[in-house]
Length: 347
Image (cartoon, rainbow, N blue to C red):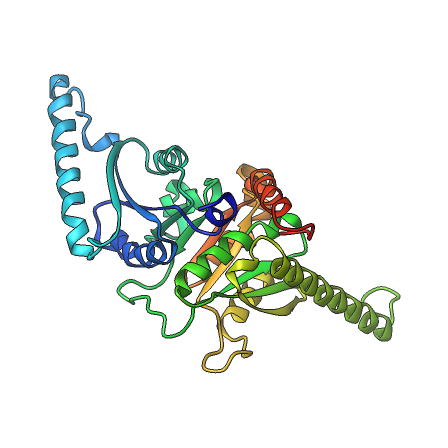
C-alpha cells in the first residue's frame, strides 16, 4: 500500500467506552467503518480516578492500590466481554484500559495510537448539567484534533442504512470549513464499501432583506449574485475533489445552496437540508452531517457560540466533527499526495 492509497482509508478507529450499554451503541457503526476501511478497531475504557481513590479520612489511604486494582480488573473483564457481545470477533480489535480524565485520556491515546477517527455515542446531557460539567462527547467535539463521529439520536433507535449512506458537508466558503471534506469522503467511502460513497456539499449564504436606502430591486440583484457565487464555489470544490487525491474514491457528489436571513437560522437550515434534499431517487436526505469546528473557548465561545455544537445539540443523526486546527497537517499531507499524481489543486 503506497502513501497515497493509505491516505484514502482510516487505518485505526477508536471507540471510547464507559461501561454503559449506551456507549456500546457506537461499536456497530465503528465496526462497519472499520470493515469498509480494512482498519483496526480500538476499544478504550477510561477508568476515572474517582473510582479508585479513597475518600480520606473516611477510607484508609493504604486501600488506594487495592481499589485501583479492583477497578482495573473490573474494566478489563468488561472489555473482554464486549467483543463477543458486539459480534466483532472477525475484526482486528485492540482493547485497552487507562486511568485518567475521560476526554484528555481519549485524545492522548488517539494521538499515540495514530487513530484516524473516533466514533462514540453522546449521552445527551443538556442544560445546566452540560454547562457546568460538560459531556465527554462535547469536549471531544470542541477539542479533539482527531475527527470525531458522534451518534446523537434518541436512545434505543438503531442506526440502519437502507441505502448507500450520504454525508452532508456544511460549508461557508472558508478553508476552515473545507477541512471536513476529506474525512467525510473517507467516511462515506467506508460505509458504502464495496460500492462508492456519496457526499452532498451545502454552501450556507446569507439572504439579505431590504434595508437603508437600497431598493428592493438592488437587494434582489445582490442576493442573486450571492447565490451565483455560492454555486460557482460549489462547482469548483466538486471539480477539485473529482480531480484531486480523493479521485480514486469515485464519490457521487451533489451540491446545494442554503440561504438564511438571520444568523440564528443557520443551524435549523443545515438540519433541514440534511433531512430533505430531494435530488436522489429512493430517498430525500442525508444520513450523516459533517462540519468543522473553530474550537472557540471561554467568554468568546459563550458570546459567539459554535454552529457545529448547535447542530450537535439539535441533530438526531450522526455528526462528524473535524477540528480546524488540523488545517496545516492535512494540507501538507494532501499536497504531498497531490504532487505524486497531478498538478490539480486539491481540498
